[in-house]
Each structure stands twice: as C-alpha cells, then as structure tokens.
Image 1 (cartoon, rainbow, N blue to C red):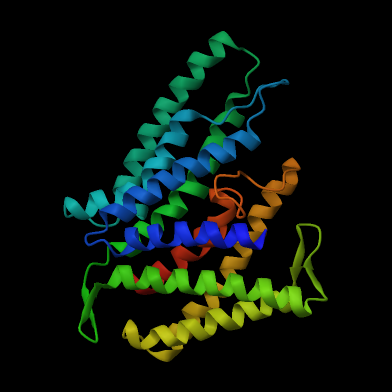
Image 2: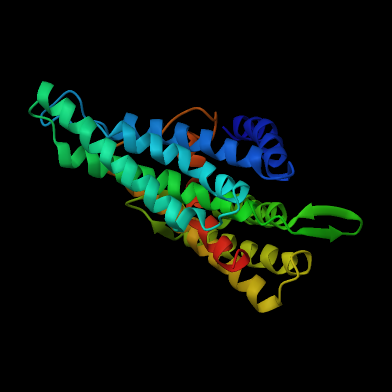
Length: 286
C-alpha cells in the first residue's frame, strides 16, 4: 500500500507542481477545473440513487457549473474584473445555473413524476459548492501575480502561496501518518476515521505550524500571521478530511474513487485542500 502511494505521488506531484508554477495561472485553473469535474463525478457515483424511489440524481446543470467554477477567477482576472469566487460573476452564473437547472428538472419530472426534484437540485448545489466553489479558491490564490524574488529566482506570489499551502498539507499529512503508526494510541474520531489518532493530529498541526513559520520570509509575512495561517491549515485540513469521512460513512463506502492508486479518488486526496485553500487565500489575497 505504501509503495503504491509513493509511486502515485512521484507521478502526480510533479504534474501538479508544474501546473502551479506555470506563469499566468491558466494551467492551474484548467487543472483544478478538471479535478473538480472528476470529484463531482465521484460524488454523484456515491450519492445518486437510481434503483429505488424516489429517484435521486444530482442536477447535471449545477454539477457542470461547479466544475467550471475554478476557471472563473482566471476569467475575471483576464477581463480585469476581480472578485471571482465571491463577486457578481459568481452570483450571475449561479442564477443562470439555477434557472437552467429548474428547467432540466421540470423536463425530467414530466417523464419520471416520482423524481425528487428538490433533492436533485439541493444535492447538485451542495456538490457544486463543496467541490467546485471551494476548489476555485485555489485559482483565486494563484491569481496573485505580483512577482516575488527568491535569491534570484522570480515566482508569482500566488504560485509561491500555493506551494507553501501544498507543503503544509503534504508534509502535515505524512507526519500524521508516520507518527500515528508509531505512537498513535488515542483515537481521534473512531466513528468517522478509525485510523486517525490524537497523536497524529497534533503532529500534523505542529508540522503545519513549523512550515507556516518557515514561509514567513518567502512571502514577506510577519511571523504571527505566518504562524496563524499554518495553524489554521493544520486544523482546517484535518477537519476537511473528517468532513469527507462523514460523507463516506453516510453511504458506507471506504473511498470516493480509485483514480489515484493508493490514495483513493480526487475527493479523497483533495479533501484537506478544499477546506484550507480559502483560509490561505483569505490572509494572502486581501
């Protein structure tokens, strides 16, 4: 299992890092949109209920809207109208998605009167916001294009911020894994994730705090702010993991997918990112 996880990481991590550092942020926006689409497909595979009544299927119009949300910050930056994930463009696109979503459900209800229209719309909207909207904060963070000089190497501030975030998440997760296996004795949330321990969780938090402080000089941040961001990532990343575990336990599945061997699906790998990216953007993007 560990060997498979490592092999997948050796392939996936360089590709994701390439998307982050490519100038302009366009490649990351595209990558996050594709990841959101894959995550939404995983979600609907688990949560759609077609074999029993009432038939429940997340509204595909809202799912499509969710998959496109990570592109929205890049689009707004290109046309010179920032405020993507929280501004007027989000509201306008949501109105359009809901309008066409209602029409879609109306057409389906004529053919299948037993369909749970409200559930379909609600499930589609939840999935779009949970996966697409939260994923879009990665693009919002990346669109901080101010150049930062690091000993002769120039990198856009958003790219540096994302690299910092991913370092906290990946190193924190790995630290929790090994510490939990070595000395983990007290279960953190046995009903949701039996393998997680308080010892591993504390190690994760400490690692994120340390990496956060290291990043203070790179991003020209005061130590208190860098430490606060790191601690927040340590807490929110683990809450994102536990929240996704609750979604899986509710449907009796171990993983949302298997597209990433040894790691599960996209949602299994990016659950911490979804909760922590908005936090880092809040402090770096304002």
